[in-house]
Image (cartoon, rainbow, N blue to C red; front, side):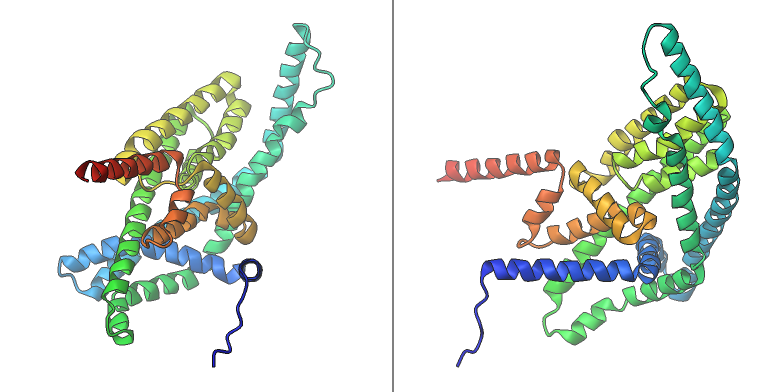
Length: 362
């Protein structure tokens, strides 16, 4: 006798939403553990390709792991030192920068008043709110520095993840008598995620290096800090480049005036146009993208759940979900909805072309 109780469609939706609310609340409550774990997973995904490359060159697994982790630790030490010293100095000078910017804003308002524009009712400080923009930079980097204090935990988690990666196929064979379909899907997802993360990291690294060199040539304070900020925010398409440019442009205005600030803004635009519209599509292809709306919503949602580090990891996390959804026929439609309009138009054109070819054959 079948004792199963039928559940209506609205009830299923309500239960799904309720489960999602519980999961999100749990993630918020456990973000002290989840954030280091996600950073460890992020580092492990980036470290996996060079580790497997060394193994293919017949270098023993232990030595390969030591080499890769040595490189990761060296980069982490440099970043931690840069973030710690620069943020402390920058935070200490924030009141000075805010005062100078307020004075320059008052000068602009006075100039506009002289040419006949009534600006007495406009609060420029409230509109620009430059102090809040600079404090946001300090908050994000302080949060990142605070997470890096859990470096030993992250380090161990990365090592265990890399060690477990090679044993996953054996575990699938032990669990299932026919693991090949699952292994093929897992291989597709992991390959695409590794490729996306590795290429995105190299593009972001090049963007940060160009920004640091450009600001260093112009004499803007803390060029390495702004290069690091551009590197981190480059993982967020479209919005990230704007957010990364704001504090550097404001600082250039404070130091040298409006003209130098416009030059800095122009430099950011050129660098991001070249890297985002020429270099990145050439190596990453057109299929690995997200809708601008999805990018913005993921930034808000992951930032609300996990804080500033969640904002930095928002697009890699959403991109991983999109790649996983794309690997299955049943969920591919969700992946298409998450993608940009160009990708939808391309796939729609391909589908229409396929239908026309079938009709011509008939």
